[in-house]
Length: 112
Length: 136
Image (cartoon, rainbow over all chains, first blue to last red; front, side, top):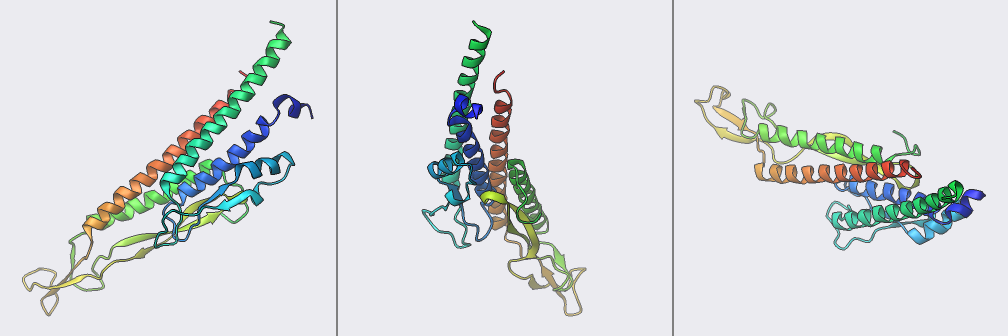
């Protein structure tokens, strides 16, 4: 596929970042739900699965809490917020790589 | 919503905000009714607490919903006050046992969680807008 050779791994990485963002958002949303177990995507595994066109579900892992709470909830806000910020930065990085590829191509097309 | 339908980040955070707003409303009613008096034990105010439940979606995504609003905490306190206009035949009134300090803590926690969800929504919105501008 031509899209694969132009954008390389970054298009796939962007999709994985998007799904990880959804999972981290779910953890933050369930910060006060009793018995909710926080989860996260193993980014490397999820990327390999996505490159083969498979769903990211097998790369889901349960988060091991630093300190357990009485209601069985394992969401730790500091961990989740850090992971969310890191993931958003990763998303922006993939975006700027894609932007670079696109501007290279359009420059070549325009013959500037 | 049943299991298996796709959940967008807007669904996840939006519903969490709605659930937290319900929690804030119950806290507000509890604080508003602190110290209210009734003429019978059944008629006295009892503090309300929402019960949150996880709503699972596809691919590990999940949001939250309010399962029900339960009454919680200590029962009303019986007080002998024969001069009170609401006093029953024995001269007793029942006062709502609302723990104001606990409710205030709950209020702060709820507002922090609401803010966290707003932040998630803002970040996601920004990233989507940046993606839309890709190649321009």
